[in-house]
Length: 438
Image (tube, rainbow, N blue to C red):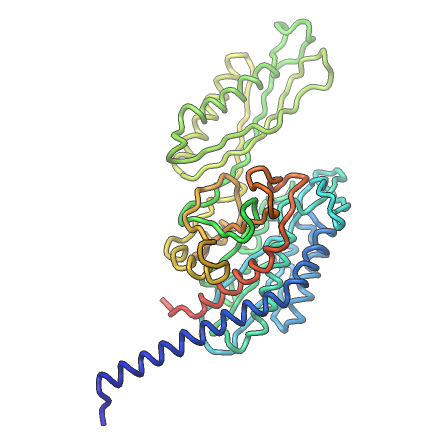
């Protein structure tokens, strides 16, 4: 006997209700598990904070991560991109979808000034010198949150309709001197997104912002970053007789002004934010000797490829003209540190309500302004669709606008937000695996 349309409708309604109820139960389970593990996540973060390591030197950190992933019964690959770690959690509820979650592991050559009881006193080697090392960008929190999500999801393994890949990446802050590739590109080259083949990837970064808020935008979110190197060559002379030489100090001053003017007077900042900064000028050894060479370096941050290429071409020509006017010569070099963080538009729209499940209504802004800081998560997005979002981590009662920024000696993370980071990671993975395949 064929069922009536009304009976079919009732069955479909009950089925939908059952599915919704099961999804709500999983969300409740994530919340409870994230709350239970929050003290451990904080302890992990503090341990990692006290033991920071520079890019491609994250040996202790990688071992710390690998040990915990193995304890959860995952397939673990180490030395993926020198010190990178990949963990694979295969769900037990069928399904062929594969999603990746990523955290970065490296610290910075910064002398910490937070006054925390677990502040770093570590040192490392950078450009041949011994330097202080600190997690001044929050990567310690990123590692701890993703480890927390790994534990939450491993505890729900039998309910997962697919596979979650956990990517712990080295050298996000750029390739160390002498290395051709940074951590993301090297991990991709060595198969981090393969076996199993990843369909989509999500990542987060703690930044100054109201604690408990999440913000991002579709398409261009974080700038493409280029390193610029300029070498000016003149002729050495006595400081009292500048006309007998070619003064590269004067040329360097004009080059800085030229770069600033080009950016401010030829780019519309309301349509394509652009920052071109000369950050180092090295020349001379004595107060009364005009040297024969000056070396400048800086950073270019852009959101439009064609505009970036045009600005580079004009800057190289203008710097050459300035040098020629003084009788000097110039060499101009540029190298990409990170591509544009481009959040897949469809995935960005889909993710907003998922993140609201984790953060609560009103705490997610999926239309945030772009930011001129950069992230090599962008290279993963060049391989598979992905979304990168920011997690506000400013201490309660502190204005985020005046809080110590990332990369500064006083940067710190409000540990109350770590539990939210765990929930956001876990929910984005679960909900993606539950999506119907395209």
